[in-house]
Image 1 (cartoon, rainbow, N blue to C red):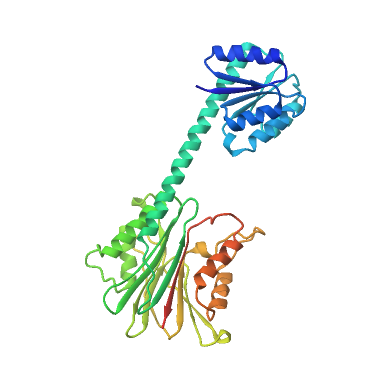
Image 2: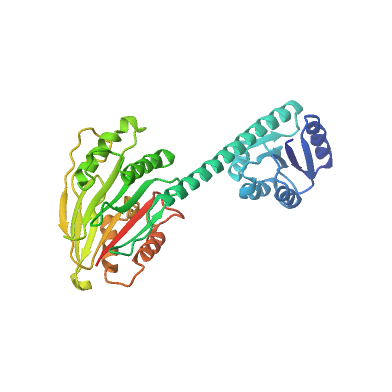
Length: 378
């Protein structure tokens, strides 16, 4: 049963509205002033409120403003009861948050029709709010599932750590690292275009394919071959128009050679040098369109010999495409400078990086997934 709250200082109006609305099957509660009305609404949120505009104490506009600012009353439909019928007064009422108006003297059929319409909108808003909560729950569960797939930190023979911060909508970031054999380590990070479950599912599929080596006949030691096989498998025409960027590398711990290939992904950042003043930066990236965008795309390998005490960062664009409080977009160059400033600092660089990025962000959550891999080479 819908509950309707009537706020009016005129007892005759209270009785009239209560009698008409109860005949329609609604539960009606009446109060005599704005203060009582707000307390009643907060204690038992009604589906609809009919409130007189002109009352001693709090006016109907003030009551409406207070009600509409409370998140627990966000779906309550608010009707102002008034003899003021000028356009200026209607605009003032709408600006205060009123959803509809009923003019005095009250016409019974109009009252019943406006109440029915208001309750339909209230129910629609309730249904939308329920669906929103269900979607947020599903996205939260999906984010936890993605986190469960991500690898644990590695301490030997390399030190590998990572951070994954899903956005509110959940994007398509995923990463992994594992030994192909006792000497070769495979590592990758991918980012599917878009947000939501449609972006997450391709990432999870790629993760499962690569971890299980389900693509038969593929040489997983050759990054360009891996990207070509993924491109053949995940053409966007068959994947809900979803494509993804990826950086994939294979490290030989005996020869210290890193072979890598990328597909539209931000460059991996390699830092090396013995002192802060001599830190050198190498951007590791190869040409290649994102996976799934075009068939028959070519990908290329490139190799780099890793010096001792080097650090490699692999990340998604959510690490630097951040809107700052001054409404300007942070840059890859700024992110690289941050990494360089931490290269010879103490441990916990990733925690410091995340704290810095969180403080830099103008919003309470990130607009995109944020993933960072840190590999320290002894």
